[in-house]
Amino acid sequence: MGKYLYTLQYTSAGLGGTVKEGFVGREAFFRKTVEGLGGKTEAAYWAYGDVDVFIVVDRPSAEKATALSLALGLTGSFRVTTTTLVGAAEMDAAARAMPGYRAPGA
Image (spheres, helix red, strand yellow):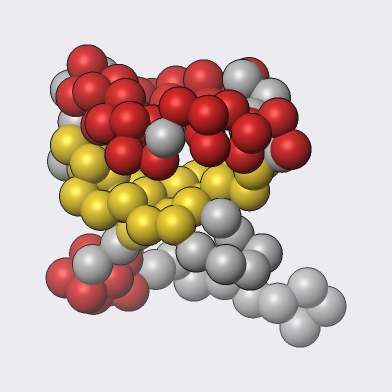
């Protein structure tokens, strides 16, 4: 499984709806949605600042990760950014697989 970080910025309507339903209830709904796609929510945190919600999810595929991002965005309740998280061993493997590449004009 791959790990993905979803960062959400509430719209006014999204924040209002979450306050109305409750933050615990919305987190439970999100976790259930992720499980329905074959994944697992590893962590969910609310924050103050440019990002309102940080969620780390284990996903079975990039397709399912993208599907969740699309569903979140289409609600109009959030601005969503999805980031693939990569571990140290995967970074080492990627470094070994780097192709030769030159900078433009070099």
